[in-house]
Length: 336
Image 1 (cartoon, rainbow, N blue to C red):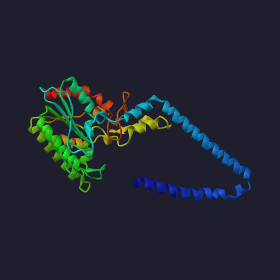
Image 2: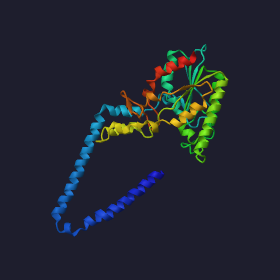
Image 3: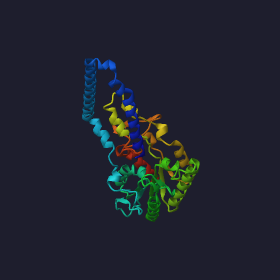
């Protein structure tokens, strides 16, 4: 709302300036007043230019609408499968109720535990565990990390995210009781590690707090005999990539390459190195699949015909699904 008021005020200021410096001087220009034919011709010319521009924009829009890639870009923004299947707890939920797949009581389950960035791995892990006939449980909640860092501030609720602390405790208690074979952890770590819900504290303080909480969470999970897999967070574009791609269809000079994401901006290298150092001596299986999304320099918005980013900080289900074979090999190696 604040930005809207600022923009509205700015538009009024610009309108007043153009009225005073352009509209009024032209209206009272004596040279035009005595040359009415020229004034009328000029007005008609401006009207024709405006109409021609409107038709040109309409034609460009129709061309873009007819492009099959537009539907692909629109589809990329669709809800994640995990959300659609009701496997991502909402902001106000305080008691964890996992999605369960596979009922083989003779086999210990695989658990996915984290926030919406963990939910990005829902589709490929569900596919892999079904193929391997392993039970699969999903504990994910919006903007709530599995790392036990307390007192996170919710920008959605505009207050301390107490529901996250309660839900995480409930989820962890159930996971420890279930004794799964593998717990997969991953979160939007940079969003929490950079300030961890305490913007009044220094960044160094908050990063240390995140590292301590990650270590404590892993130790509790390991104490019950779980194998813990820590997956590096996916790249965050920082802007709405599907919308950028859609614009490239109708704006001359706005090419899909303009929607590239610089690797160093998309991947929080410092945060990842700290996480690896934190769990280095804890027998955690550390997995980095970032090369599937990003090259040495850029993270392409479309890779082999698949739109990579769903919004400004999530990847699409289609992009994650292509990594099912990699996850299969990882889980098999962990089981050995």
